[in-house]
Image (tube, rainbow, N blue to C red; front, side, top):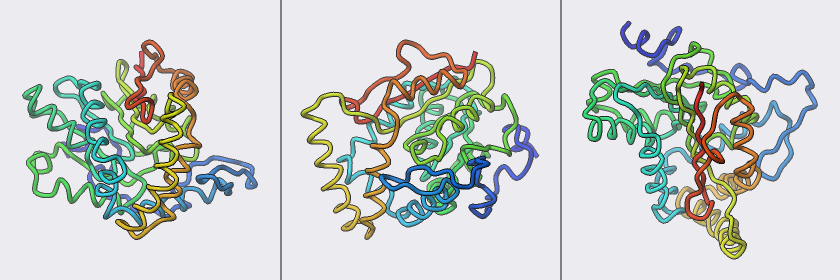
Length: 288
């Protein structure tokens, strides 16, 4: 099958691989008492994956609308800049992990078509949540990219991309997803494995606001406004309380940049770029 060869995957690349949470769990902990964080709560490691899946199943249908409401549309500018920073080469193959509703994948393909004049570049979306990935499939339904087999979808775990062979992709992206993973360091190591030599890891994630006054205003917006928006727009206050808390539990910029270097990536400068005073950061590393 041409699609399978293009993505160097073992099988079932363009079909959903629906599996139970326990079958997909890759926490790898031999200690059954190991715990981790779920927002500000402490939970068993084995339970986090299922809890996170429940959050995103609940908000999937209103996810994009809520992103506009929470950020006043600024998330679109962040994602546009993310793709311009990526500056993918013609013919590049992107693995978009935690691809969700497909907005990064669409921007990537738009960039290739309009900037590079490229009709060969392709992207494979992976998300652990079937409901989120279904939203992404709907985005591309009937598109020329789907008809040309330049977009594919797989339900999969970012910590264990078993269906992807080593050295398969030119670019790996994960946008607003890695903080929800049980072991971000394992996610980054897996990204290193599946990228080709010379390939690029790129992560867009909420981070730490650097200005103390702005940080206070950001906390006010995060803890008081966003949960109320979640309740009003998505009918789910609790999920958005978790999403806000998960941002505060994610490592700050310098610490996450070191995780990327520890996985084997080479970074340029500090390894990240702050956007909107550190509300989000773009992290990048190369596999040399």
